[in-house]
Image 1 (cartoon, rainbow, N blue to C red):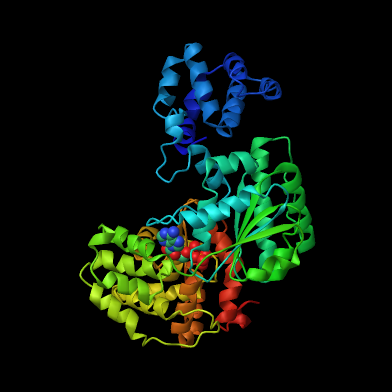
Image 2: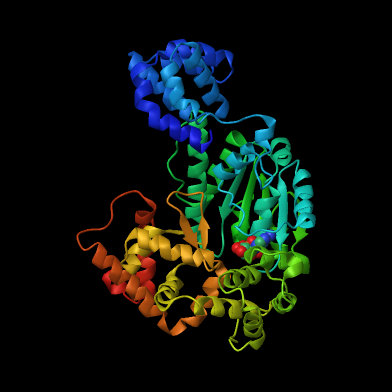
Length: 506
Ligand code: ADP
């Protein structure tokens, strides 16, 4: 059910519970096919009218737009006009026109499936790469049996954006993956982190399947990697047949082996040969490290609200200098949005290559990224620059809520949101809008850059995290089950270890 409708139901819940007689409404809903006989029996078994009403609403909240509309119509037919009017404004549109009305080409159905599966949204400034997207879709269409599609290419070349884009397609999802699309960010991690990731995926899948079928039970978290793998195999086979698992940014063959469970997988990686060690059909799509020139120019034009043809001559040179890297073009674009007359200056910055440093990976020319990052950080106010540098302490691929940073920076959550908005606007930080509250993260190339830049100060930055935490929670650790609490639960010891404060752990 779409967000507006759900929210309206929640707001009107107590009025509805007071008045409605579920048994009258359910007849209509059954004949509309949005309620089953079993569900009706379960609701009728509640002893009082009010409890029946509450149970019906609880069930309705887990259903789709169609169910909301059927419930609304039932209210009208049973002369609950005043209650129906509470729901009227949020009636979802389900005509074919409305289905097509999303600007990104996805339908409401696609949006709902992808959002449920945690697939990232498009970046705010986005250009399509139709040839590449089609190549990935074509491979996915051929994934009739369990197997693997590998999307490989350099860091920052746009693999994750491409993978998310490929599944933003109504026909592909309905024909090939009616069981849904499930996204898992991997990155560089050790066995215990991998276990945590699979545990949380299993938990998510079980929770969603329980919402659809309350008779299914939630299991305790698998305790070992082997157990987690078996749990996932069971879930994919029994509860989510014909679904697609997207594993984003895999580095290690031992990680991919944990997902060798006879399901359909799309993975993004820098290592082309990763899928060699697993069984099943395999295909691959190469992503060039840079965008075509006209696409990169389009990104710049979108940032400065202009037409690609009207960009100044330096635009082409900028694209050439960073070899069309989507990540770098986005950083420079965000800078130009703020300082539209600095084309020559940023070109010069990119060309200078004064910010040279040694990289472990020699396979790619990262100079352009370093220059773009250095320039972006330079235009931050002094205060914001200091705050941004604190982000060096984050672990790769870990997303944090603003509240964690409000502890680190000792600022009000609202002030933190403002600071983060500034970083997001400058493409220095990314926001995952699927979660409430929002979660924030850095691209791993950006974290590499920060780590390199602040190498000598790393220990004291981690010490700051620990001290700020101790100050905020001097009365006792956070106890709620929210994202902030989970963060400290998982990473406080990590910060202590990096700060060389392990003696304080005991
Ligand atoms: P990878 O997964 O290869 O490391 P990402 O997909 O995370 O790279 O892309 C890195 C960044 O480049 C994104 O955060 C975004 O800012 C930019 N980017 C990638 N693809 C596009 C695109 N098609 N249009 C606009 N920007 C893009």
